[in-house]
Image (cartoon, rainbow over the protein chains, first blue to last red):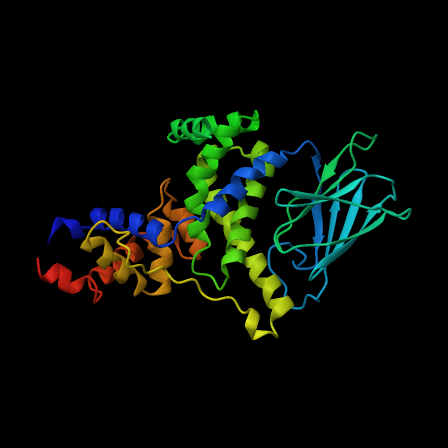
Length: 148
Length: 196
């Protein structure tokens, strides 16, 4: 057989063909590179509950409602978030007057927090995360990125 | 920005074991080099799903957000390609479930299956490439998935591909062989081969 069609040659051509037919879009690469801009100067909160996941956190549930509830925690803070299409409401416990910032890609939006620790926001499509606190005694905390 | 691009290129072949600590130390070019080394692994791992373009980009971006936030916990940098592939797949499954839940009633919103772009602009440098592209597009989705994952640089191991495709590790080699044989016997490649 023509040596251009042996396994190794064919695999090498395939590698190029697949890249050319379905290249990584430039804007997607740029977003990935920009991920570093938001370098984490904050403690990463742990996801302890996600209504989209079952109890073991491995299998996606079929019976989740229209609102997705998530709970994140660090040693002394809990951040609860309810996500619906287009918006979120959340609550810090214990209630504190800490700055809360919604991050989407490289966009950051400061959110108002009431005296019960509650906040709300309009969200755009795409991944988001919350950053809570700053130079105060509790330090800064960030949730992992939430895919939605 | 020429200097940045050039510096990133110079890091192109640098091992993950070297790039990870440098990225953690805040060296932007090292992070950029990591993205460039791993972007195809992530992108191809999320090909062929019932996802629109924007959702696929979101899953891709989220994969690198997670990589960035978890970088300090990576113990075996050599396993990064496998980690990225798995993470990207998980993002897709989360997105698919969220989409189905939120929009299942609106067929307008059902995402299109991405098709390989067919262009007449001569992206391929010769007829062989064109024939392979057409042949690949006519393979089963399973063969396409396997060949996408088996032709990556840096490569995924058969074990990693087996985990992603939920296939026994030992069957990846034989299946890859079968898919290559099918590719050679597609309508696009058969006359091409027979005529030589």
